[in-house]
Image 1: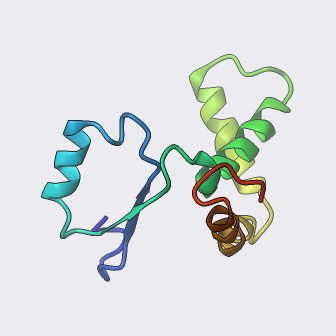
Image 2 (image 1 turned 180 degrees about the horizontal axis):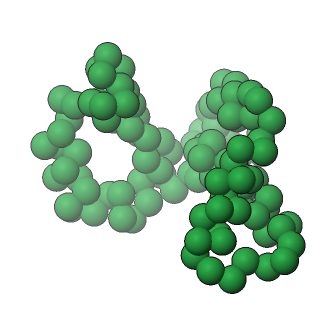
Length: 115
C-alpha cells in the first residue's frame, strides 16, 4: 500500500468474507492500521466491489478466444491481450458507478441491491 499510495491516501476494501474476517486477517489489519485506511464494506456484499465486474468482463473475453487455451502460458497471454483490448476509460465506468451503488445500498439498509 505504501508503494502504490505513497501519499498515505490508500484505502483497503474488503467485504467481510470469512477469510477476510479471520483472526489472522483481523490481527494483520490491526498491526498495519497506520499504513492505510480500512474501508469496511457491508458484510458479504461482492456486488459493491467493482473488481468483481472487471474480473467477470476479463474472464468472458478470455473464454471467447479460439482455439481453446491449453497451457498456463496461453492463459497468461490471453489475459494480457484481453486486458489491453479493453477500450480506453473502461475502468473509469465501474468507478463512476459507485455513488449509485452506495445509494442503492443505503436504500436497502445494507441488504441486497439492484443497482
